[in-house]
Image 1 (cartoon, rainbow, N blue to C red):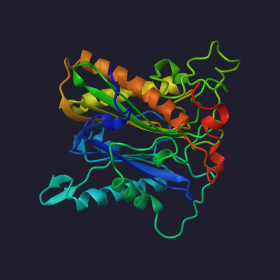
Image 2 (spheres, rainbow, N blue to C red):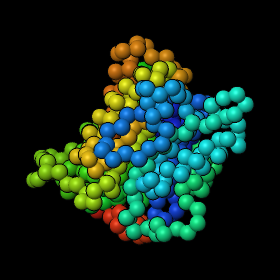
Image 3 (cartoon, rainbow, N blue to C red):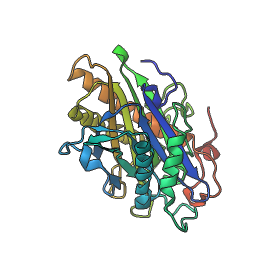
Length: 335
């Protein structure tokens, strides 16, 4: 397998935009496909915050979407999808119903309301405007770490962040992941600098420390943020493979394994973990069963790597004083 930028935008035809507000200590990340793309979703956490997920669920009648949104702000952040819809509507993009065009823009949010930022805004909800700015910034290159939806994110004892990674399988099928990491648990083994996802790391992308030589004492005793409902890891896995909606759903289900490889514990009652799957349909699978199985396995690896990258790339940010110190301040950079 080979990689390019090691971003979800290595899947051709995708752009990602970020916007955040330093004072608010929160932000929005938008993924925009050049054309409508098949989408599905898998929800595992006990406290999700979502929009339009029923429509792209297996029982829903919507097959394709025009954008996907990851946002901070808890339920307030759900206004971000409105900003993306407005942006797309002005471009004439949307699901056609007679002369009307309705952009389909599913979204998931994370809780970052108690990270030290100023959440007492006056007037309009800020997330719609942040989403509009993220759309304007959408590109095939974008920032990781303290950016977009990951700007105000946290884990146990340190900042979370926005992560991405990609891989290419035989036959030209590419898969990428984009994730905002705000988990109830930890991305590192105990209190050490070693990431749970170290076995899947490529080219030192999150520090190259590898696995710990031995399991640190008490590493298997779960460390969990104490505030109920103040967590969630939200992600998108995207591929250029030609998938049906049920196949895209299976891709999302398999990709959830990447969270279990990178976070401990995960899918708790305190999390709202969500994975969207997006398929642009440019590359045929060699086999609908074994090809999808391989794609899902690699997608899980890629999501695990993206989670660790998001934490590793987080930056020091004094306004977000409750989000904790960043990984590099605690442990340094590359070994």
